[in-house]
Length: 417
Image (cartoon, rainbow, N blue to C red; front, side, top):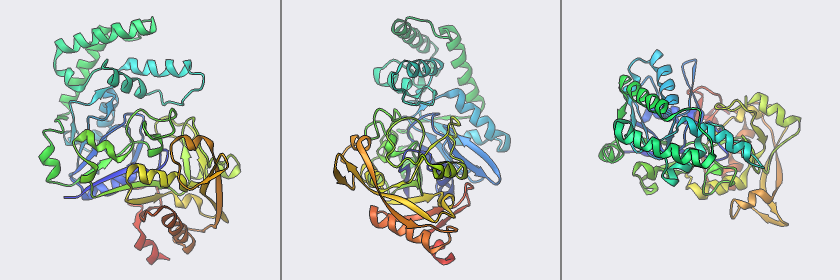
């Protein structure tokens, strides 16, 4: 049975949620394997818009099911709010979601820490303030909670007391939520999940199920924000690449395909290097046309031209076998479109960054191609062919609008020209 991973090929915000939602009609399971509520995956069901921060982008009108894996850090309160929104339109849908008890919990004081640490930094990273970094830090330093502790009140209290003591000693202050308040809060969240009939099932228990059916793995953020290989320290705190499927018990060798989603231009939220950033009026025009404001924070996204060295880097780092291109329509009507084909790194021309450090020193080398009036035009096809030739990865699908059904294959595009 088919196994497909969909990841962001740039700095996130490429439109992965819509792409996953489109493909979900052909898959029984949609598995989110990393990240937390710092993601914002926008999907449409008919004309109704939903923004999922934690829930996998299943198609609510068919029988696909969602699994939240152990690589995630889960704000349970946020998760419940997302479930309630879907329940209003699709009663009983919560029973189609499964949580791995090994997943880590984002606690209210993680959000306090996130804002506190950001204020303390000489150069802010530009976090979302959702507590993601502190949660992953606690996970690595063995000072947090996994979902399974919600079902053991004695262990839960013991762990909270240990964690609170550590936090208080570290920051020399009390947090806004006391231990007793946190205990009541978490017990209430567990009761609400049970009321909604959410399932708790480990990837171990799902081993045979996943291998006997079709699975679509949904990544969060983008390759260039990966903790190990992104533009560190201006990255997220989890895995953004296809290798993150290991947290659900899979090897990348078990995947049939890995699709990288890319915009026809490039965007970035927050601080950090951005070689092709366009600060002119054209950048502002594309921001307005593309509605480039974060689904999670509402912040303006930084705008730049398409970056081929970054895409080549993403291809190798995440083993991309195909591309899905989005927002080509945002560039409609431009006479010319610039494309970064290489970097000047300290006087050396590089078509492929050797390490993430190269992004900090890169000066873009551009080529200019002819624009197009609409995406069903020969010049847009030439643009796609140029990207394919330069990266060695074929573009199999084109998204031409925000709605789920606004997708077509390369052959559809050719037939429409």
